[in-house]
Image (cartoon, rainbow, N blue to C red; front, side, top):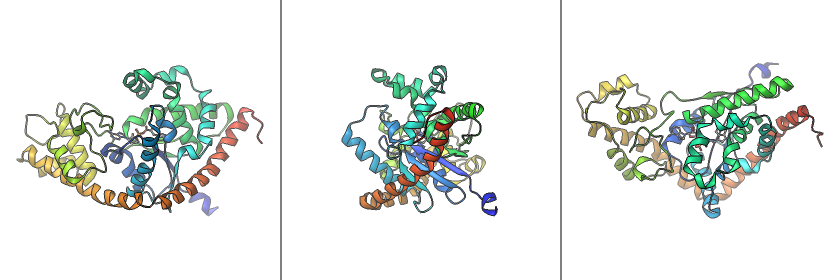
Length: 335
Ligand code: TYM
């Protein structure tokens, strides 16, 4: 009984292994993934099935998956405390996604901003997977009966879709799925491009100076911050029309924990040059241990294989329970 009341809340999130991991991914999501491990029962995945909605070159894709696994471990995901698996190793995800596809409306998926953005960007390959991608994400989350989903602001719409589909399914069949909440950081929820601060920071940006990668060297990080686009006011303050400075303040605040008022106070009378250097230094120090740990993990592929194999087996068992429950409610005959 006591155990019942003490049951930890479940956290689920995932990231696509589609190349380097960015400062946006880190501040928007992964920093929270690591922080939530003490208090909650955390389940994280590399969403490799999602990644093939954009054409991948097989050898590079394989390397990106292993690299991303090492990078996330290096960010402090502890496999003793949390489950961290590779989505394609657990076959329940694609299975539940199919079932949920049949409970999701064409109109709902058409309204997803990520679908609209990505189909504009990859106009030569607007495949069905790109369209139904959000339902696979819904399945990821619902399979683990997650209470909270730590993500950046760009994924909020998908978590809202998850809530709608869970409520719809529960409305038809009783309490099958937990209805989850998005968990979005106060600062860092939407890290913007350093070159065009009206656009989200993204690894696919053509301008290399727009995006800081977790594995960038300290020199490269500093260079990118020094080149960051700002404005002509030369005053560090958070205000409309100062998107470049607002973005740098949000990054600085997310890394140091300082409030905007404190930052404005500390940089009162100082120029943008000093501020950019301070932001660059703070980010370099935040990422330094991650880079060092990444080198250790990537050199030990056998250790990583052991981690993702074990985690995948456990994830399979947990998620099978939910899949069976959902299939039974729909009327399938279980084995
Ligand atoms: P992905 O791989 O694009 O991004 C991983 C996480 O990083 C966040 N993020 C950002 N946060 C702040 N500023 C940015 N510039 C920025 N760019 C990315 C994203 O919000 C995300 O939290 N569909 C998901 C992966 C996924 C998933 C899931 C997430 C698959 N299944 C289930 C949660 C639950 C995606 O493509 O994220």
